Image (cartoon, rainbow, N blue to C red; front, top):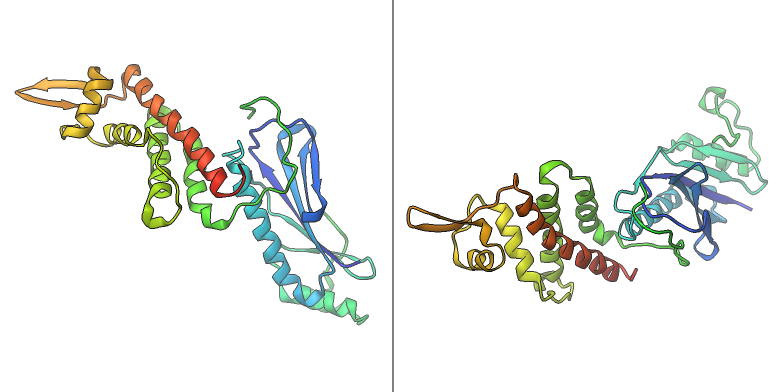
Length: 280
């Protein structure tokens, strides 16, 4: 039977899974963890009965399916998951012959497959050089692999990208940058003009005040200053008759205060993206 298959290596798998692999037969997909390196794995997706003239289109659809899977896994405790090497693409013709297809599939190769299907000779194409032989960190307790194939609409690619990017911040600015990223997502999800239909959590304004605190040189306007006077008086400075708050990233107490709101925002954003993507 004709079959088009793409195998994509995946890296930076952070979740720990009970099972080494799972196959979603109805979705024509299989996910396998590498035995000696469980933070890497492979996603295999395929489609049966693909005629040669539709190979190019179907490759695009299968790559889209891989992208949707990756987005879904990034908000399922794998925010750093990334594609590894270029995918391996293979096509099996109706008589069982295997063709390996480059990532950037040349039209000449598709012509070869069509000629093979028609029983026509094709040895001179591509200068006789054509080869049809198939060549080819833990952060939580172990969990089960999803029973249904996880996919997320590419509509959420930008928001999930902002969420995932926050995992890569490091150094003294880690917590404040993460807070900014997470609140950016909160703002967009709760914006009535965006049509997401997400209600603001009770602590929305508190997270906003904390975001403002790390985003400005000084805080001297009433609302955020009052919030800080009440919740973090250490940040308040009285100078020359003026009262203002100032964030000092060199002080552990300031970082720990921000961490409280970073963590609240992180948990809310993670659940929100799962729900919006129907992965809850």
